[in-house]
Image (cartoon, rainbow, N blue to C red; front, side, top):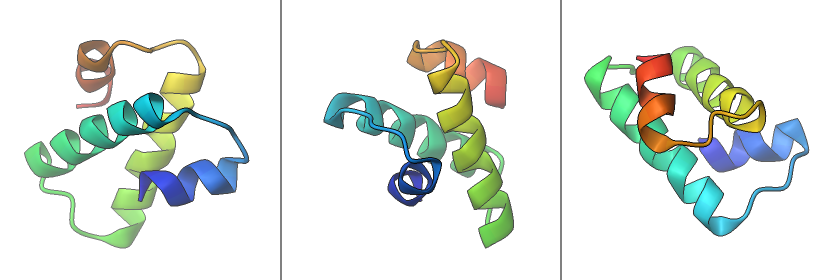
Length: 66
């Protein structure tokens, strides 16, 4: 899900950055029990948007988005 949203946002992230965003996405999806495609896409967009706007710390991203 994260990779497809990165492609749609037409942004370039390195492998480590993508992995960080994916971990945050996976954790929040699990905690919030997100199951619908719409909710998953929204979360993926929010993770990427927050990361691109300076929230680069994994813990900070999780706290912001939970």
